[in-house]
Every structure is written in structure tokens, then in C-alpha cells.
Amino acid sequence: MRRRLVVIAIAVLAVGGLTWGVFAWIHAQSHVTTDDAYVESPIATLAAKVSGHVVNLAIEDNQAVKTGELLLRIDQRDYQARRDQARAAVGVAEASYRAVRSETQLARETIQAQIEEANAALEAARVAEQTSEAAVDESKARLESKRAALAAISAEVVGSRSNAAQAGREKDRFKRLADSGYVSQRDFEQADAAESSAGAALEAIQRRVVQAEREVQQGEAEVAGRVLAVKQARQRVVELRATLNRAESQRHQVEVKEAEVGRAEAALTQSKADLAFAELQLEHTEVRSPMNGLVSRKSVELGQMVQVGQPLLAIVPLTEVWVLANFKETQLGRVRAGMPAFVEIDTFPGKTFHGVVDSISAGTGARFSLLPPENATGNWVKVVQRIPVKIRLDAKEFGNPHTLRAGMSAVVTVRVK
Image 1 (cartoon, rainbow, N blue to C red):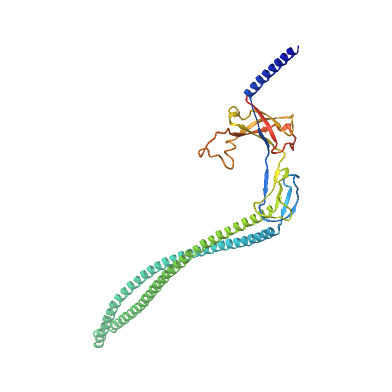
Image 2 (cartoon, rainbow, N blue to C red):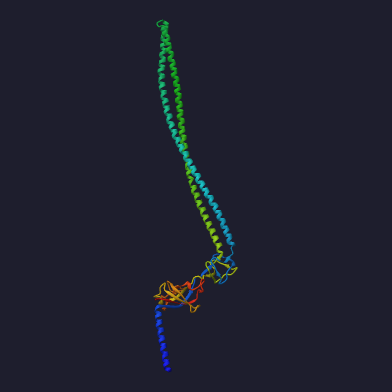
């Protein structure tokens, strides 16, 4: 009887072992498992962006904080003074920029007005020169006409003088004949009248000659005056052309002023940048939380002197969590993103969290270590490598904030079929 019971027990154990073996084999064909897995979450390490003494510390270790909440404050007095100095420098730079810009505009308008005025005066002088030259030609023409008239009158003087001499001789001849009684008194009187008329005509023509000579002299004087006016007009054109050239040469002053405007604008931009930097430095004296979470690794105390880049504390958010499973490289042949995963956390025995494969790392953990292996040197021993796989958990299975903490150990199983 006892022997039968032993046989039955052995048979039951054999059947059970076989069943378990078959189940384990089937499970191994459709699942891969690793216990080299840990809970991960983002960690924001805060460092000092400015140096100074901590004058206000508003947090403690493991304290819950919200986004934008003040964590600590560094002494602001030095940075406030720098901001005020930068603000005053901006005011000075703005005033200088406005003054230089106004001076440049005034210089540009003044020089342009001078150039336009010089151009107008030069054009008027050229017109006056042309008018004077035309007047000279006109005066010369009148002078030539007067000279021709004088020549004609002078020719008449010769004829009149000859007529007067002939009339005088006729008068003397008729006087002798009248005294001898050969001609009548009337004929003598006619000869006397003719002689007087010829003399009067000669005198009139001589007066006309004198008048014509005076007109010629006046014409010559007029021509000389007009010629002098032409010379003066030409000299005026030369002077105004020089004035225009001087006005044109002043344009480089505008270029110099414009360069000063550019320099003043650059100085203003620099002063504004200095002010923005000073305000940013002042803002950095207040360290605020970038997210909701818990304060961790607090390494700063009230009154401590902190330096730029010095780590102060870390903020661990409790709204996002994932699991990083380090599978053997021999297990990842069938693992793909999107496959379902089952996670068991050592802190919560008997509870299974569901998730999916989010992504597979681009390299093994050893390859990204501080001292990666150099397999091509020295003795080499083949070691199965592990590759991190990110498992994204179902957010509905834990609260917000979640109860999982970064670094908790886990066992991860991925169903590959």
C-alpha cells in the first residue's frame, strides 16, 4: 500500500513537473524576462546661475513644490546696483543717439539747401553771362551802325564844304560884276543868299558830324561797359562754381555723421544688452522650481556662499515614470517597440503593472559607461552585453502623483508573440 502511494506521488510529481516544464517552455517561447530593471523618472538638477550669499531658503528635503515656487534667494543688492547702472547707461546712450541723429538730419538738410542755393545762383549767373554776351553783341551792332552813319555824314561834310566854297566864289564874282554894273543887284543878292545857305548847310552837317562822333564814343563806351559786365558775369560763374564745389564737398560730413549715428546706435544696442543681462542676472538671484515635484539632494544652506554652476538641489517630478529594463542582447532578437510588457515592482509584491515597449537603446550599457571596454587590446573575454529597453507604463494604474520612486527594483516581462 505504501509502495503504491509512493508510486502515485512520484507519478503526480512527474506529471506536474512535465506540465510545468511544458508551460515554462511555451512561456519562454513567447516571453522574455529580466530582473535587471529599475524605475526611472526625470530629475531636474538646479545649479546657481549667479554667485552670492543665500539670504532666503524656503524649502526642505523631500518637500513638495509647484512650478514657479520660490526655492531660495541670493543676495540681490549687488545685482540691483548693476541693473540701475545699466539702466542709466541706456538713458545716456539713447540721448546720445537722438542727438547725433538730429545733428545728422540737420547737417543733411543744411548741406542740401546750400547745394540747391549754389546751383540756383550758378544757373542765374550763367543766364546773366549769356544775357551780357548778347548785350555786347547788340551794343557792337549799334556801334557799327553809328560808325557807318558817321562815315556817311563825314562824306557829306566834304560835299557841303565844296558847295560852300563854290557859293563863296560865286558870291565874290557876282559882287565884282555888280560893282561893274554887268549884273543886277538882285543876282548879287541871290548869290549872297546861296553862299549863306551853303555855309549854314555846312555848319549843320558839321554839327551832325560832332553829334555822330559823340554817339560813336558813347557806343564804344557802352560796348566797353558791356564787355566788362561779361567779364564780371564770367567771374561770378567761376565763383559760384567754386561755391557749389565747396557745398558738394560738405557731403562727406553727412557720411561722417551717419557713421556717428551707426556708432551711437551700436552703443545703444550694447547698453540695452547690458541692461537685459543685468536684469537677467537679478532674476537669477531667485531660484524657482521649474516643475511640480519633490525636493531632493538639497546641498545648500542659509547664509552659504554659492558660486556659478554649483549644484544646489534636485526636483523630482511625480507625474511621469517609466521602467528601464536591461535585457541580454540574446533576448532582444524578437523585441520590438509597441509590444506589451508586464512589470512587477519589488516594493509592491503581488501587483503587476502593465505597459508597452517604448524604445530600445542605441548601444549597450557598457558602451556608454565612463570607461567603455577596449576589446581590441590585451586579452579578450566575451561577455554577454545588456541593452537598456524603455518601458512606458500605463498611467491609469498609479496615482498622480505616482507612488513609484526612481531607482525601485523591478522584474520586466515582454510578450514577443
